[in-house]
Length: 103
Image (cartoon, rainbow, N blue to C red; front, top):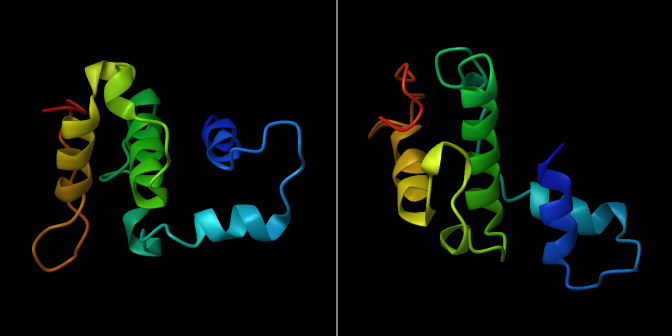
């Protein structure tokens, strides 16, 4: 749910009400597959939640610059990109999450 305000602000139309299609355009950019949604990739708790938020934000290419402020767990734009790349192996299969969400 914390992703929705960032998607809304990405429209650059504060005060207006975006349509379902507006939001759908952003969510259609997400490349996660059903198999990605498991406890090995997105570990239970805030670490998995942060990883999911990061994966969505990167796929949606939100205008909010993650390097302008430190994200939870000290993630900046470079580490978010590395995290996104690590979510899948070279064949596109989900990777197993490490116990440390940034390591």
